[in-house]
Length: 241
Image (tube, rainbow, N blue to C red; front, side, top):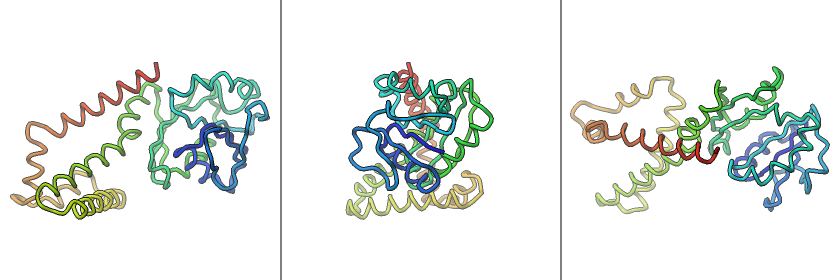
């Protein structure tokens, strides 16, 4: 199958690298200086012969789409997996190392075989989940699409707090970052519920319990995260509009 990738930034490039050797990959992105190995640059979409054996992957931000939408019409007329046969997805940045998760929702004219095609194309980036309603994409964006940045920001704050308590800043960041990545790896490898993993490291009356008590005081952490997700979801809806 031929894949036309429109947009080859961090996310698009990650997908293109995952398709290497399995598909012919054409890339249309005038701003991309370098392309992943094996990808072929397309200077104009008018030169692309789309058809039923071609999937068009738009790896662009929603606010960019109005500027390129009109140029995609020839591809739709040639029955690519596109236009009415649209699958909207929301990946996240860990896709760059094959550890992402992408939510997908099918458009009105998607065919049964298209689901397998999308699963195959997104498989190299990590997990794929299907949702029932496109409206859910905004919340998906707020939770998993934007989510990595929340964890990065918390780790920055943890390192800064360690420095404020007397650690050298470089050491505080090393400890915080390794704790973040180690905890994520443990959560991915251990099938136990996160609540159980938390309990395993929380001795009654110990240091972890003291820290968690402050996070849970008047539901502080839950209220903060709820506001974060609400704000991100609201902005996603604004951009879609």
